[in-house]
Every structure is written in C-alpha cells, then in structure tokens.
Length: 226
Image (cartoon, rainbow, N blue to C red; front, side):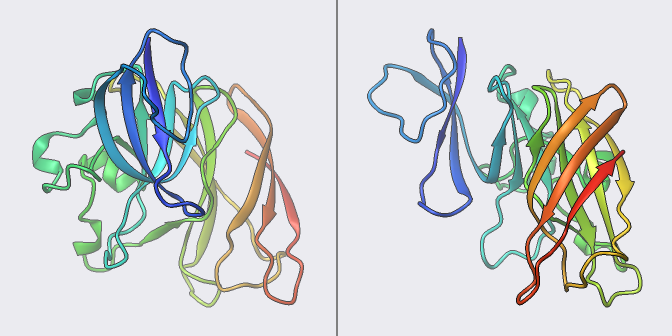
C-alpha cells in the first residue's frame, strides 16, 4: 500500500518536508521516518499541511522562503497517484523542484494557466492571501478562507471556499462564497483561528468560523451556510 509520511523539520512552525513512500502497511502519519525498509518515491516542501481523514490527500500552501514575493498558492497532493500526476508540466516549474509539487487549487488564475507562480507579474492583478489552513469535511472535500486586501482597502474582500478533490491528476472543483465582514470587529486582516465544518452534504456546507482576536478585543465567531 502506498503511504505518505510527514516529517516536521522545524518544531513549532508550519514548514514540513513530505515524503511519499511505498509500504505494505496501513497508511501511517508520523513525525519521523524511523528505520522502516521503505522506498521513498517523492519528496517536497510544503507549508501548513492538512491531511485528509484517510491520508489519501494532503492540502498545503506552496512553501515560500522569507525573501519570496510570490503570492499564496494552495496545492493538493494525491498520495494514490504517481509523482508525475502530482506535478504541472516541467515548463511550469521554474526549476523549483522541491516547491513546485502538487496541483493548484487556488487562486483560480494558477489553475486556469497551469502555473505555480507568475500572476504577480501582471500589473494590477488582485493578490489573494490565504486566511486559514485547509479543513477537511470528508476525505475528498475541504474548506478554507482567502481574502484580498485589508479593511482600509476599497477592493477588500473575504470568501470561504469549498474544494472537491478527484485525484488521478484531475483538477479539483472549487466553489466560493463571499463573506460579509461589515458586522465583524474591524481588523487590518481577518484570519481564522479555527474552522469547524458542521455539515457538508452535496452542494451545501455549514461552517463555524472562529477569528483570530484583534489585540485588546475579542473577535466574534461566525456561522456560514454556503
């Protein structure tokens, strides 16, 4: 059975080295590789990894070194597929062989253009930032938050997104709904501290969002149906 082993290299951070391995054992998630006689078949860098309930998929932010000015890109890796199906074509990877792994999920520009980076190079392109980690509702569905700009920006926006992953190199299916933040406590940027998926059956999901508190204030929670 194919297994994916997550190795957290820097304690207390959201940076991880992921190794896909062949094993006849059940899928195991661990912080160390240990002495197992297994063959490493893939290896790459991720940020804020989130693993589906059975371990079939892993959703993560494309790893960015401190000096990078690239925008946030959310990617998905299918443990049940081979390394080639978990990568865009070679001409899209810009020699970033340890970072350019997985299929783009968001922003949609990266999905449509099949590129890991480059939207920053377009003048006036709206830059999105991920405002939460991916939270799995089922083994094939997860939700996350993303936003554009800050509270003082005229084009600021915040939305919750639902992703259905299909595996086998197929593009994930994304649907989105804007969140009205006018009744929430003003903050430069709204980030979710926790998202609880209450229900996600068919085309309707319900989630409870707990915001990261603004200094000196208590940020409210928000119930969203989308």
